[in-house]
Image 1 (tube, helix red, strand yellow):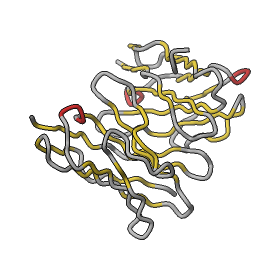
Image 2: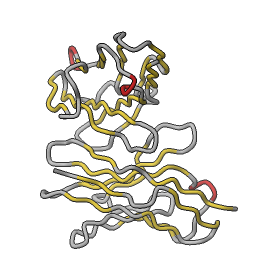
Image 3: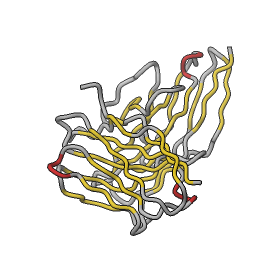
Length: 108
Length: 112
């Protein structure tokens, strides 16, 4: 079975401060990990995926297989980063499993 | 093509009635997913199609739920004999082989 855990439901940081959204997963196979974001009144959309190893909107995430984690980080938070963030795992059967999400608020 | 489209956006129904939601994916996408989301939770996997074949169905999905994707294009999700616990946002997403999911805006169901 697979599970994605996001321990923080709410996270508030000041503008310009670093931010880290935690994600841990459990899966016996080799997963693909993603971060999806939902801005206010918008649909859920892909932020980044571990396989591409790129930085999107200043966010990065490193897959740590030893710790089974895929934490999302940004060195300097911006007000427009305020949103709901979901960590997701794709298994070898092409199913996607989502965490419960973290609501990030960036305080001006 | 403006993306994944879902209809209706909102549905209010009485307990015991049947409801049907429609999803029109991005035209070239061969994979289509249905998710359910309740307050404070992430999207919960319901079922998944590759073209017209329903490849996986969550064990959480009761027999009152059925989904189809005739001709591998649009999909419908029907809930029979609705219960108050069925109240949720029903999300549809489509993808190609790349793995990125493109979501619709969702269909919100309220069962009175």
